[in-house]
Length: 111
Length: 174
Image (cartoon, rainbow over all chains, first blue to last red; front, side, top):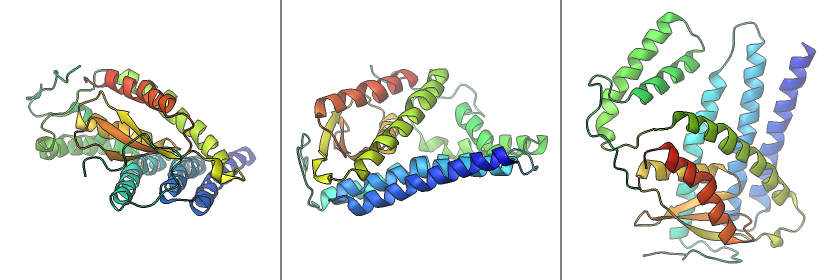
């Protein structure tokens, strides 16, 4: 199945690309809060694309349609924001330094 | 805009959370990867039993009043925004000069009062690349959001309020 292989490869490469740029972002960004944004990308489109590739691949293996992969994305969507929130919240309470260009929210409200 | 329609007693006694039951059944069928009658029965049983135990955990929960709108919001706003925002964040990450990024915190005032819907909104903001919810203010009336590149805070706040908060208010009875 040449066509299926093409689709699977496309999604795998796309997912790998987003995971890679997420890591590059983690490395290149200048302060803690900016670094948080890198991994968020890797979890959404990166893992999402790989899950689609896996679903397509196993659906055409002849054992019926494969939908496990949707759950991986679903659980990631539930858990990833919570961990990001905790990291950011902890950093704010520790007063982690940041390159601030502008701030329209008070940094430590009602401490 | 108060959440006045919260129910204290369920409509059907043995089925306290019909939507949760349905979601659990669907998740079970995804997990086992089959639609055989046995698994539908087993998933249905799990979907009925789990809400019995978790019911007391949700003393007041927002009511889903527009399920169709939720589907439209999920696929055409949420998923499409994730794709568009991912591409724009990739551009930001790979640009040669990172010092041009205007990152910083913005404070988004909330109209939603329900804690569950606030959590949903905060998660949506975090999942959309470029913005991460950093904190909920103590009185739960605003979210503090960190943005990777926010040239104009006012537009960003307006965008979050109209694009995500307004639909959520419509979807849930809040």
